[in-house]
Image (cartoon, rainbow, N blue to C red; front, top):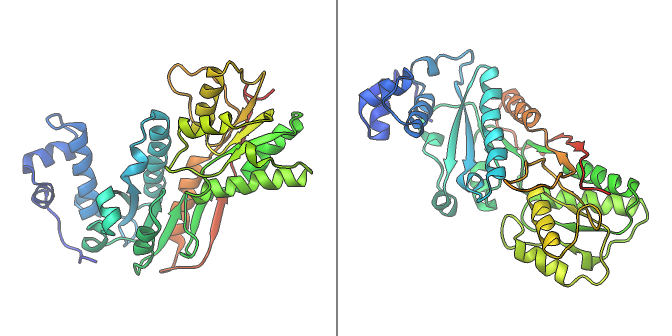
Length: 338
């Protein structure tokens, strides 16, 4: 890591290839620079430890938060808001503990080439929070660094380290049991279990709830694979097209899938919840014009952020123990279940 030294505004300007005056305006919160550039300047000041950003209660100074740009580029604004809340929740949680959170994007080219952000080698920091879904090879590249590491929201088996995640298994179990208590016995499942640990765990919670209640799972009423990070409308249509015997309810492993399913059912003249009940996961707000009042499991985002910050800052050194810190989601009952 880089050695500590006094950082000037010119250092920030040189890093961003902009004028020193622009840096001064941004750091004094004066007009004259756009919001995007102001954000970049402030983040660079944090990363370099400039002025007040270098004066910390702790000697470590900063925590790196590595975030794949992909999770901030969904076409729907709901996921953007979800991940935006998580990222700034992390910054708030880390700051509350006297440290700086340096939000560091990982673009597709970096991820494919296994290129680490230069912050990893050019600044002093306490450790890394790897947030969101990255390819296993890239996660391994970060995992191999000789620094404290916490993975947040997702993880890869075979890369043991502390992890903070929502309690997907128990949350899915509770969601499906709610459907069962509501009188449903024939319940389908939609979720890309082949892509992330979260969806895989939610499938297991669904399977466990069905099995514990003596209910069978019809493979024709489930789809557990997707070619992308979220199921598409085409994949949902394919499932509905091949249904012979329809379930009375579906558990969807996230809310985006639930909203897509509701749209497809409406096109077929079916009503939610009169004809089919739906439960989702995450508690995303419905898109503009969507009237579905979705029953879901709310992910407790701020509690997860607090737990990740607390866990990382409590590590005495590099830890690659398989520690799991699960935050239980909350059942939110609305109008999508008969």
